[in-house]
Structures are given as C-alpha cells and as structure tokens.
Image: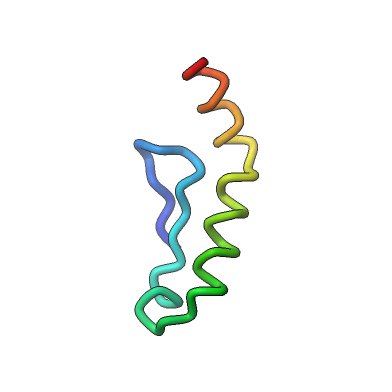
Length: 46
C-alpha cells in the first residue's frame, strides 16, 4: 500500500490496482479517507 505524504488519507492498494481488483482499491481508499490523518488534513484546509 502506498500512503501519500502530500495528501494525507490518499491510500492506494497498488497490487490490487495492478490486478484489476477495483473493489479492494476502493475499500482501501475509503479507509484512508476515513482516517484520523485525513480528518486533520481537512481541518487544516478549512
């Protein structure tokens, strides 16, 4: 999994993406967007 340092909460399941397992890609992405680090990032942007 790759976690962006520039955009906290942007998590990409690379192996799943390359294998075409889009359901897993979206699940991991959603977990990142629901993370505390993403919530903090959004608060800083506001």
